[in-house]
Image 1 (cartoon, helix red, strand yellow):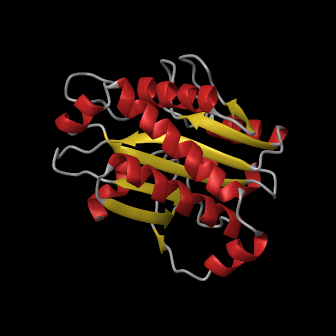
Image 2: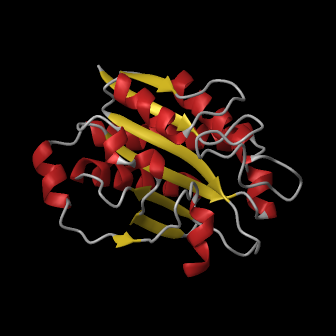
Length: 220
């Protein structure tokens, strides 16, 4: 049985090891850290035919290296860090998924599968699959065989999307999409993964210590 580590972004009340307690906040106060934990708990509860390990199950914070370390200790087949985006303008919206700038072909395959399925659930604009040096995805912190990606499901800072994110059925749909993406990746042959690796993926420069994609969205 495959092991998958799902990482609810943020948590707690203080910054720990580069991980901030919260990034995005909705117009009425809905917190990213609450949503990531909610969605990831739903993923764990719904999982079949795979072992799902959460990096956190309560409102606590873990350093970025510690989050990756959980995947390494479990020799995870896949690691998915779940986030919601934020931006000052409420007009910015979309779904995007990242792998590390040095990420493997397997990480690219995972990111593409997650992006496709989550995009299907959100129905938002496709902001694509990109490479960026997120510390939590750093291959040096993971087992060599682990595929790792970070998904920014949507922009919590848009009022209409925040309203949707308060609906349990929508949160269930997001959890189902994450599981479908993971399952698709786990079912891919090595040949299929290698064949798809030739596709060019945009590389986004990040400032040192950047944890979320919001800091680079002005480029889009």
